[in-house]
Image (cartoon, rainbow, N blue to C red):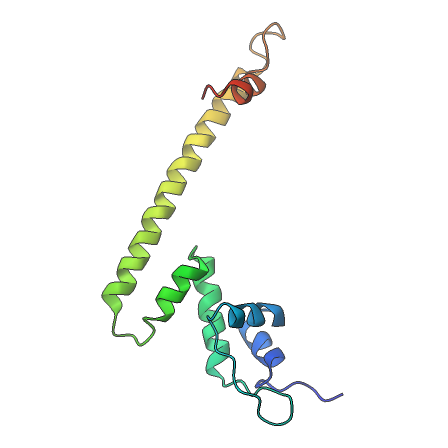
Length: 136
């Protein structure tokens, strides 16, 4: 069997560090264009497709949703730095809010864990009690 070239979907996937189904999913969602079929039944993928897929994966690793990635891709001409900065600032604010939520959850759990066993088994478990009655 012939080894796939980089211009095949398999080659694009390898070059981008993803699997073929990821590339296909990005195509279905409109994030990656589907090239026309060239020779026979094969599609000939230009090198920039792998670059685009890597861009999408890196953006996802930074917490951007695919909808947000689509907005970033619309700015990829490089002339809309202010808009990209605004999108990144919005994402950063959401991450900061999530960190604050996680810190609150951490404090609550730490407090509940500290209460366990404090009553010598004579009181109900504070973790179960809090979860059952919602008193955080």
